[in-house]
Length: 149
Length: 352
Image (cartoon, rainbow over all chains, first blue to last red; front, side, top):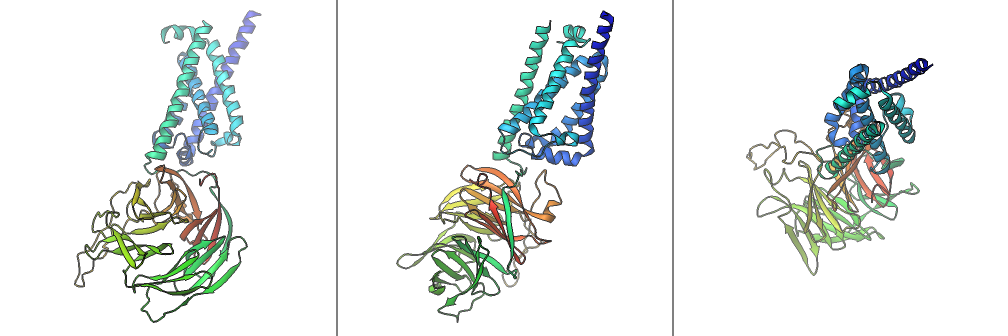
């Protein structure tokens, strides 16, 4: 009984983490595949326009890096923390755009383009919560917790 | 244990939020105050109302009063086209001058309601009349030659001319008090190369005639003056070319100097509207789409009082033709494109 319960929980975490990986790999590739367009969009973003030159590289590369970290079991915890903090940054970015910027630019690429800005916040919050759950229940939490953090 | 992880997560969260917020403020500051040619295009600052065919491509904007736009015509110098921007009704106006035996070469008509002025700086002469009768009498003759002129009230004309002392281009004012007086302000235009080509540009006057301006063609600068021609501010655009990029020939036998190579045009045209300056730049910014210049003219909006760059928008071509002139009156943005007049409505929240 306990074993069975343990396995399902494990599996669930695995599943959640895979979702995170898929999200970031998808996000990064869709940016890189349509790089010119992505550059224009970042350039038009009220929050980021001045930093376009380096952000267009940093954003997709760090997304891929985080995905890789999540794939390697011993780096998974760090990966989760990075995932969490990127999602928080992204959500902050959306909130700033919606409330404090001069104007609201066109939204992001891929399937996510279909989301409105508020849906986007909900979507992001769901992933932040998901990341928090994974951090709390991740198997690697303890060893890394004591050594790294 | 869990509490400790939560604590770490919240610290991480706060740091992430702070990072983006700092990025935002830095970016805003860079864009509005310290811009190095990064444009920003908000959605629909102007909305197209209609295109009106006016049959000739030789019209220029002479002035505006109460929803009526007046167009002069370079090939029919004494003809005006009056367009009611609300109803699209047009009416032809024939101007009568009391003296026609002058060696006219470059006649231009400009309004300063209720007066209108017919000016030719090569004669030099200025006729003045009222918009009621459309008859003008010789008002000024031989006070000063000028290469460009805009009336700012019934008795004052803002001009650009060549100083007879220095042979440099200067801004000035022809004023009629008891007699005609020419007042030049040689300190406004700053010489970079020869003081003629390098300072070339265009005169600007706000609709209420309270602010004057000058836009340099070959460098990223414009000047704002008050109606007594005193400099209020010298502003830079988001372009990065500070020194005119022009090449001049040696003086030839006739004493002429010519451009040796096509100059690098930084600013093409502009207009003043409230505290804003709208500038048409033919140059691509850092993140601009390269093919846009084939489809539209780019208009950059600045606030000279706040010393900021505000935003940019596209003024679309009609077919392959770019706008050759544009202006803003009340809430209308008007542009002359080939044989047509394009009329747009301003989004009032953007043009405050």
